[in-house]
Length: 305
Picture 1 (tube, rainbow, N blue to C red):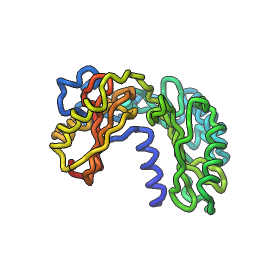
Picture 2 (cartoon, helix red, strand yellow; picture 1 turned 135 degrees about the vertical axis):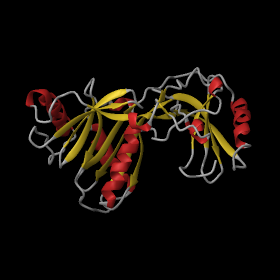
Picture 3 (tube, one colour; picture 1 turned 120 degrees about the vertical axis):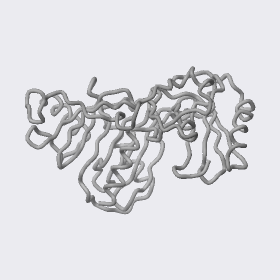
């Protein structure tokens, strides 16, 4: 059960990604160009069930989504899961953070989530708790992961590159494939899954489709460093590293300053200089490479900035 809880937490973090932390900037006046500052009045409104008056077992209303779900199950080569009107529950949700509506179909065997508007697969979770164990080296698991990835029908494999495999336990490994632009990883466009190498069963799967804005680099690294130093001096850190990366703008600094509002996530990723501080909370700062604006950041939850 502990293992299952960790896996479910893992997939939730992937599908909401790039994190569920609420974000903002230190200076709203400087960030109006990129950050929308669109607030949601309370956390209870960020993911709400939609009551469309359709019962779970209305065959005519639900047959389409059941067919879509089973098509994905077949594509994923999962042989012990089948959704039917009799064994499944179907619910629709408004995901205000991601500005989309989602349909979730679940039964005792699995949970599958799709975009309600275009039926794109968002996530899959197996409810199975026991898998065959085995000893594998990283190269063996990498080859198995690539084979699984190459058989996915939901994406164009030519657009993605292998990122990593990592061991979760004796039964399960995790893998990530993502798009790259100018040698930089865009985790906003990624496919992440966990699987059992012994049987090649997919345990969890998340497909992230946050597009890259392809913004130009107008700010030099020296200029970005000077901007970051102002924030470094306010932190517990004494030094930092700074590099150009692709990030998703967020509202981290408003929460840091006590703003408990919930904000809609920005629907794109951008080139930014990422300043990584050497404090215990591993604080980071995102400086937009085009405008020099502070467009977000991150830190270990519960740490000191």
